[in-house]
Amino acid sequence: MDNCPHVLMNNISTGTPLNATPTGIMSFDKYPICTDLSQLDADIAIVGAPCDLSIQGRTGARFGPRGIRFGSIWNRPSDAGRYDPVKDEYYLARDKWRIVDCGDADLIPGDLEATFRNIEHAVREITRRGAMPVILGGDHSITIPVARGLDEVGTFHVLHFDSHLDWTDNVGGQLYSNGSPCRFMSRLPYVGKMAHLGINGIGSSGRSDFYDARDNGDVILTPKDIRSLGVDGVMEKLPKGERYFVTFDIDVFNFMQAPGTGSPMLGGMFYEEITELLEAVANLGSIVAFDLVEVSPLYDNPNQQTSILAATIIKDFLGYITKRRERLGER
Ligand SMILES: [Mn+2]
Image 1: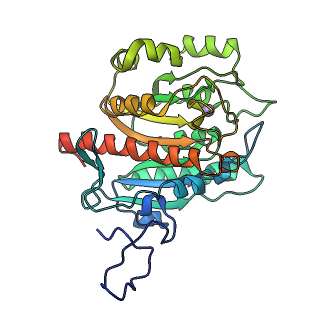
Image 2: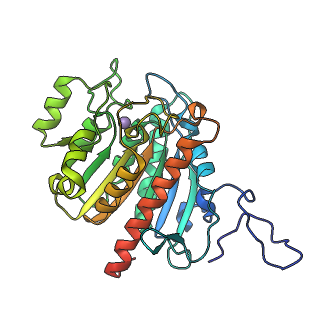
């Protein structure tokens, strides 16, 4: 597959574009762009949901997709994929996996419902074309239309990485806040069980919300729980099933690793811990979709640390998901 469609084909000396890191129109990891979903033919489709209309505090996550794309380009892609010297494995071979960037769902300023409809529609269309949607947020309210758009993929469990529980009923009467996606999902008939990993922060969810989540059968693990259980112990606690939707809030990371977010938390998880958990999660069952939310590049440090971390997490997880499929002989 041509892995550099966004650079001029004008390397006069060799006839083949080098596709160096700074060149090209910025799709995620320089994957091909397909903004007409009726033409989508891919295994994995990345789409941005640049909506931050539902956050109480620091807005700016509408620039999350842009930041994550910029954070994704620092390793020059090759057709053989990403070589991990620690695992001695190649991941995400470009001549094997068809991954495309579909651009962004349209943001309609001041109109949450219209913006949500656009996100929901994009996710549903991607699943109808047989691709796995990967959604770049946006604040965590975008998981509400993402979950709505997954209504045709069958039942699934939810694995939620976050410092906050996100089980708030409403914020000042607003039911669709960035503190509410998990309560929203608990009411969907096609959502099974939920597990919340990394919970440690004071957020909009109060004690009664934690009771409601536990009454719903949710598993809630703090960073301390995760560290004492170990990866295998954590996996034993997770709901068993065929299919999972993973929703990943960047504020699950310690503020030191992810400063570019609206509600940063000290005391969170670190990269090596999270990527190990994601590898184990990828091997639990099939992942129907994955979103990564709350990256807010305007609060990031000048070296784009949070955006690079977010992009790395996405590439790691996609690598683990496709590696499992390769082992099982699936697409
Ligand atoms: Mn959240």
